[in-house]
Length: 231
Image (tube, rainbow, N blue to C red; front, side, top):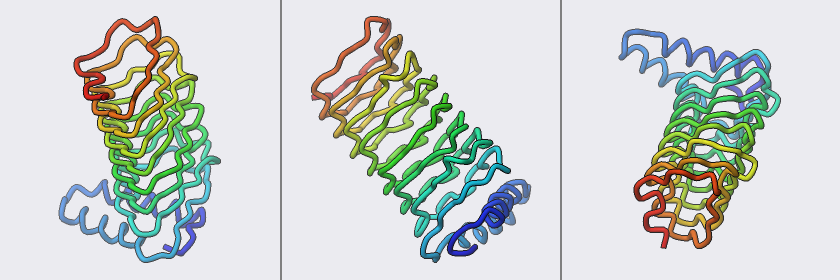
């Protein structure tokens, strides 16, 4: 892996990870994955360039590239519709992420514990965010969701401790899963979807900085402890 990933080496790296996961023998699979993932370490800077040849990032493709993967500028990846489960999990140096413009789904744990991620751009095509997708992203300060959003799964943004502003104003209605924003202790401004019908249990529990909230008239159900300890 070179200091800057060009289109060919990026495609090869993604293919290598996918091939590793296809190996049935667990010990051999883990050994090959370790070799591929270690190739992401020790480089000054890894900058993922755009390519239109890939439709999805596979499961755990770049998991644990923790030292130098700092920026994901994927806006021109128009063919990518799915980011796989745990694809960028534990990339602790990642600070900026512009997701593909055609992205539809972010898989569970995709950016889990990317603790330096401070800037996140969600595309206008995004419909669903998986379980614990951004759990523990403790540098995120603001989130603006696109009108296309339909569902946020359980624990999706839980423990994003620096998050101060969450804006659903462009969204008509969306499923906000259990514990989706649990423990976002600095969340002070929350704008809910304009026609929201349900908030699941513990969705915003322990958001202790939340002092003002306007609930839409369309709301029919608020789950147990949905706003517990919002002191």
